[in-house]
Image 1 (cartoon, rainbow, N blue to C red):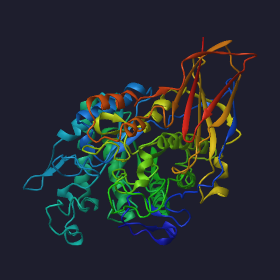
Image 2: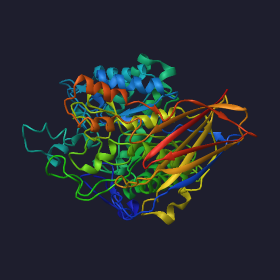
Image 3: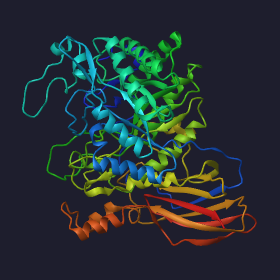
Image 4: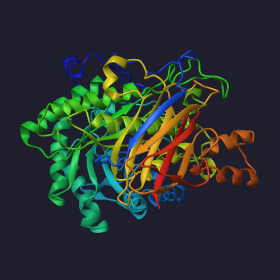
Length: 586
């Protein structure tokens, strides 16, 4: 474990069972349920299509996952291609475990790239078979790699790890190495540097300079918790060695870190890391960190299959924004790093990714319309946060991919479930893909503002209707408007009546397309439930589910009349829902 002092860490304590979460002294571990909370029943949204605007950062164009060996399965490659086909922006893709030793047999929250080996004399040699399959699948789908350089290969585990971290042998486990010995600092930093150099040389030869110049190179994952079983000082030195090794091969490579968690442990660790780098003039082209919106209490239940959660809980937007802001402000303490991109390369509503509704039914939100609406709100609020802080977020990564062997709608944090069925969550990214390149002025009179964070936290925000609007180079205007509350158990039989007033329109007539995600639209989960939640659906049932899993229109395309450069659109927003109104000049 790290030896960071309490002063450096703040007063947080680490929950050793929960990767990615430090126990906060400010926030509860998840938001509660309040059936008496007030609803938003009406809202007015105003959009100025003629406003100067600013270039929008597609912060959502990034995903990652633990299970590196599922990248190159037929399903994994198909999912990556699906995203590449609908997204105008290439995603950065960040898998764990490229340097982990193993057979390449994928399991939930486990995997192995199996690159590094030593012969009987201790001389290193390398096997890039799995690395090639992984990176080929990403690049061939039109994406770019975020190379997470971790963790310690079996042949580089220090001797003391074998006595400090032991494991009782059992047919249900592998070895102490898989149980965490990979988290120890490598015993030979020169051999580690050779490994990093070899990987950089290999991908440069395989993919070419133009492609590899788009990649991000990052050391480790969450070194402020159990992923790193050394000291902060050992990590800092390893970063120095790693960055130099990458840059020897790729002088213009983008290197960064330290990929800390969002709690006080991460804040302290990042501060000392940036201080070390600043003092030694080390290259840092991006600063990375994580945030999670919840872990449930109890985190996992052991009861009847499909039982209700002991406590109704939900993710907290305020917790995530507070953690992001805290780490942006640590960056701002160092003028050298205040302007480099922040990469929130795990930015998720809850942990862990591989647990679902059978572990705790609170994970049910990951199946439903709740999650895409939550994500639309989160991305919009992070963009707002960028406008209020010195440092800013360039990418906010969803740690979501898919899981081999799960049941239909297991409830894991994934873009796809069994049977090749896309979950509603993926449709949020289809909506983001339709946004234009310029963010224009837009406001709702029923929205919560990120500038209210200090007066709202540690509670969740109130129910709201909010908006994000963009303009494309051809004059197309896209208005993303949603109704959301940070309470997956809240319901309302009455839809909110929302008036969308758009001014500054240049043409006299527009074509209006209205896309919608809610319980009845763009929602394969609802169809599956209506069919009786089959775990072995017939061909006809599976066809019906597949037919409703993509992004759907709420209404037929129609003409929109414009008078004096203005148009009014009235929509009804149930709780939870998000609409995208696309106004294309004729």
